[in-house]
Length: 390
Image (cartoon, helix red, strand yellow):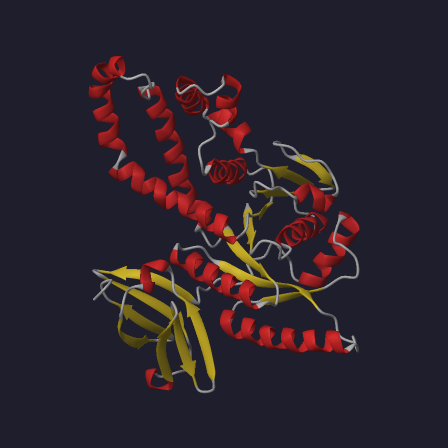
């Protein structure tokens, strides 16, 4: 099964792009499922149909699914949900309200991960298209497996043992119900499921991410940061999709100015994300809703390209740990180290080659670490970062 995740800053049109991509996959004969992980679902609006917490057929070869965190929690992790509801009820919260607020923070992301894995393991479809939440929430979604592994390895074993010993003594003294061993068992199953997600999501033969953006300064900056973090956590980005590009032939002075702005930012996108494929989508003269407009958008994005293909397999940048240091590796072929100039500014690494400069948004783990050297290793520039505050 092929899994493709679409993400981007809120408002860039990623839901329309994901829906159009899924529709084109279905039209090319793939049995396709498109699902939304955004709590503020708009996938159904794109197809102009009502969707629910179970996949529904929306076209030939195409099913759509909007994940409901509350529905998933009650269906699959009832012990956890019931325990949280009991805690709220003992604190005086109305029973109905306690049921409603018993969905823990982050449950939308967890439910989404479960369904991605569920669909992949059942392999009932050829392609799974995921319309992700805006960038920040998507990064939370994709870092959940790492957090789950840490909690499972470091905290879970001794906390469960400590609770087994302390529960009989503490429960009579406090009014708040303590988690039972069954609740801990359910939590462990949940965490193991999350840990298993990492292998699926970081397999470049199965999964890739596509970043959707508009030609605006803030949008491009967020896309660059997202790209850095995706590399940091080992997720392959195989394309960048530039949405709502002004068409040629607009002669009004107002649009001429916007054309110049778009041309400048288009050049920045190409320099920043090279060698990833950069796919462009024009600004249409009507809203992209329904299968006719989604088909039109899909043809504009992909042309003769198969949207289910792996559009790029390399990793142009990555972050790895080496002892107490971190190394940021950037693919810059056909150059010697003497041809490259490095500088730091406002949380970014500035890489200058001749008359061109690339601004690499540094992940948080590197922002407060000093650069202590750089070397060329084949076609990769490897920048070393020392201890924080060093």
